[in-house]
Length: 240
Image (cartoon, rainbow, N blue to C red; front, side, top):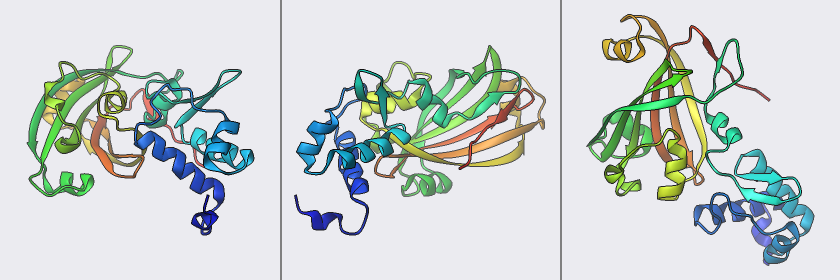
C-alpha cells in the first residue's frame, strides 16, 4: 500500500474512511458480520492496532456494533442505540421510549426555496413530503413534515406503507445510511392543523425541531420539521 496517501491525517482516520466506503458502496450490509481485525489488517495493509482504532471510531459513530464473543457487525437502524441517537425527546418521569407514528399524508411536490437549500436541490426539483403524527404511550407527542429528494428514492411513491423507522427504510430499500444530523430548535405557536393533530389549542406553545439528516458522504437525505408538545417531555442532549 502507498503510505503517502495517509500523510496528511492520522492513519486510522484514513483507514476508517476506507471502511466507511464499504458501507456506502453496499459491500457491507446492515446486520452483516464484518471480517476480523486480523483479516482487515491483512486486506488493508496496516497494523491490527490501526484497524482497531478505525473500528472504534466507527463504533462510536454507531455505524458498527460490537457483540461480546460474537464479533463486530454493521449496525441496523432499528437497534435501540441507533434509534435514540436521533430521537432526543425523553419523558420527564420515565425512561426513554421510541414513539409510534401514523401517516397523515404523502404527496409528491416541487421543492420550495428553503427545502432546496436544505437538501442541495434546485427550487422546483421533485420531492416527496410526508406528514405524520407521532405518539408516546398512545398520546400525541409531535406532528412532523418530512421532505425527501425524489431523485434519491426511486419508487418511493410505490411503497404500500411507510414504516415508523424511516431511517431503516432508507437503508434497507434504498441503500442510504444516515450518518449524522444537524438540528435547530425554536419555540413556536401551534397552527390550526397542528393543534388538530396534537389535540391542543391553536396557539399553544410547541417546540419546533428542524433537522437535516445526511448520509455517510455528508449529502443531505432528509429535511424534517417536527412540532412537539413538551408538557411531559424534554429535549435531552449530552455534550462532551
